[in-house]
Image (cartoon, rainbow, N blue to C red):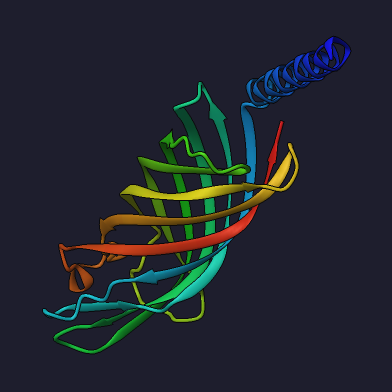
Length: 208
């Protein structure tokens, strides 16, 4: 009887020790991997502005987003991202319709709030920050006087990282960007109005 109790106590003690070591190892691994690189494919859907003249409608497009983030502690981090796409900005003016195809460059920085959940291998987060959007006309549509233009932007969003291993996993994210409709330095294309860009994305991350 005593031998059975001793054996059970030993097994219980061993289980507790293993659990403590495993928990400590997991916590240490998280603290030792504060950096993360992300590579994502994105869709870009811009809200149309058709309630006035001139009006604007941007074509839907796809692109990519790459980023680096650093986690300061369990709750807070920061990240920087660069994105690229190409779309067409369509305008209806008092004189005639105009279309400009432009390379779209997105450079943003944001604070990241990590949300603790009791779900293994899932790390949700929210983000908020700002940056710059660059609209660079291509040669597909020639509009006299159109120039490369940079617009400031507010960015917000959220998503989740799904760990496959300690260093690699899948990221699903939604980002929203608020900025002034580009006019490419042309008065006749100036709406003087803000618009919203929805940017859902999915991709991979690497932690180190």
